[in-house]
Image 1 (cartoon, rainbow, N blue to C red):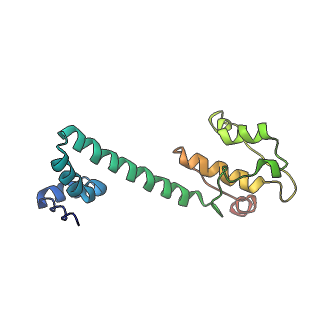
Image 2 (spheres, rainbow, N blue to C red):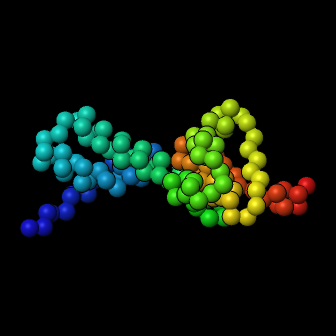
Image 3 (cartoon, rainbow, N blue to C red):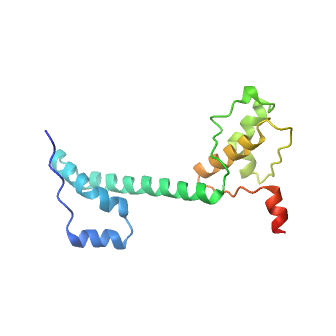
Length: 148
């Protein structure tokens, strides 16, 4: 049995949600309100559900924007990094992955021959920083020199 479509919101509510830039609430409100009526949700449950959907959507959009602005050449995560296959000692990798060095305002310089995991580590740290709400910009030394 196919559930009937949720009735649309009244135009004044649609316009108010549009003016407040609550796109996800505007999109999900008809279904949430229909569910709330059938399951006898309280007003607080309705509001909580709509607000949580809006927050989740905004956090995801902000993450996508920060990743794009980061300018990463590829998106690699620290979870995909194989510490055992690299020359980076596990305690060093775990410290880098914790991003404690960022909070301590320390610089990071990775030096080593090709294939040791430098690029994957720095991109993975950048992606993790973005996931934690930080703004990141990936730059190559040659580009910085050219800018100067």
